[in-house]
Length: 297
Image (cartoon, rainbow, N blue to C red; front, top):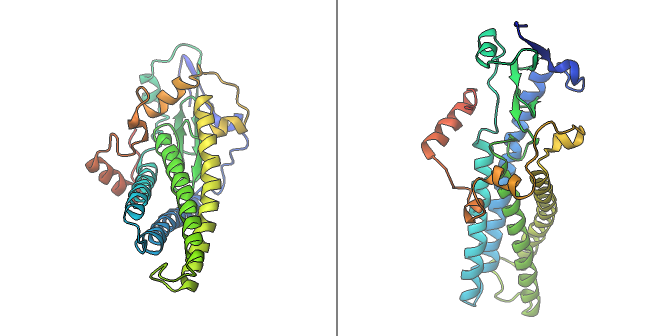
């Protein structure tokens, strides 16, 4: 499709690594896997909360110790799950499907000779720095990667929630490891007498599984958190870095990059996953995703 005054190029001609075959089957399968991964994430966080609260904190004799640590851990866990939900349900920056029409291109008021690109898979005009996700079957603005643990792409509009998710998971993992060490030391000191409402064998198994989970989560999310901050401060997505794409845009580095992702000047609102949340709109978006509706842009 071409129009006078500008040219429309097929993205696939310039990026042969983006194969056109097998997207539907792979996308359907991976979306199911994404739901399983998201469910596993919630189960593991709730399991950690159960062990921390009912195995370690509630049986403690000291009054301030369980109150303080319980308040800190449960607050961080709620923030982690809220960040996960915001990442999963927020539009990552999806480009409308099938907008590569003559009427739409004429409305862009392009300059003579200006080149625009069409994605051959979702038949959409591809904005600068957008990439096609074979799992979401959409082009995503500033797509960083598709994360099965949140069952969504990480892109222009939900990257801040993904950063908060990795940060809070890393924090509760570190906190759980510290509490597990203190609890194990205390129980050994009193020979597991009145140390927990569970038997020593059950308590040890629960603590071992929690420590393994915490070490794995802490390692993964801490690395991912650092990678995301590096990408934001350098205004370069993971896909752009892996493909070694030369920047054709004006880079917003360091604090300018942080402000562009988190919005506004530095404040505690950056750490609040509930900031800007509209429950009615979130409910409509959740229903739209289940029914296969288009993302709102």
